[in-house]
Image (cartoon, rainbow, N blue to C red; front, side):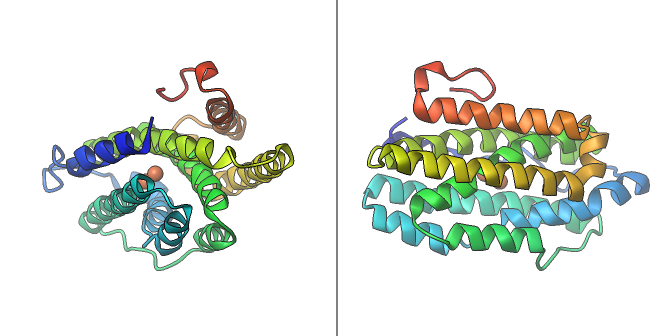
Length: 241
Ligand SMILES: [Fe+2]
Ligand SMILES: [Fe+2]
């Protein structure tokens, strides 16, 4: 999809949480709260970013439509953080100020230009896609399930958006450059999957993902994204094309 179409998508999606009444009656059992709290705190923290470096790198890329997309994409992720924060406040789960995994991701995103930033972001989007499905499965809170469902819908589109951007960035790359970037991304994907499993295993396990299944699912989506980036026509049905 062209960036001007992504811009339209993000414009239209500004009211993505309008159908969810965050004040409606809802129940989260104490036992469930114990299982999900610290995990939810970390993901809520990860969703919130001012996106300054992403915006600055996008400016350098020099495509006004892409810059407009980024201008809309950043607040869309911030709305994920805001809605999760509102839910947590209702349930008496305090917000996290920082976490080392989130700090590492923020540092990695700042390391070099736009392609590196988007590749790191894509890894986070893939993890989010699997995690929110697990959280959806793991909870009986109707409100949290509705929030997860909307976030999952958005993350599918984010994955496609990042892939479309990477297709553009790759055009200028030599074969060695492509190999280097996708190899580094593979290493990051592997490390992140292991770390996320360790920190969120209670929610993932309860949501139906043992380590093997989690690894398999994240790498299936990761492979799909690579197929999509390199040969769009061959992409499968793991995320909508
Ligand atoms: Fe998100
Ligand atoms: Fe996202």
